Length: 69
Image (tube, rainbow, N blue to C red; front, side, top):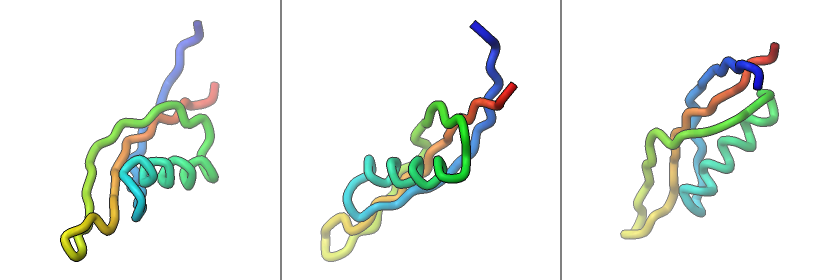
C-alpha cells in the first residue's frame, strides 16, 4: 500500500429537492475541474423556508483530494 497525501477544500452545494441532492450538486460541479476526489464530510446543513415549507437546501461539505505522486 502506498502512502497518500490529501488536500481538503470546503464547498457548498444547493438544491430545491433535498440535502442529498445539494451534496451531489457540489460534488458534480467540483469533479468538472478537480481530479482525484476521494471522500467528503458534511460540515453544515442550512435551508430556506417559504410558506412554512422547505424551499431550498444548502449543504457545505469538506472534500478530500488525493495529491498525485
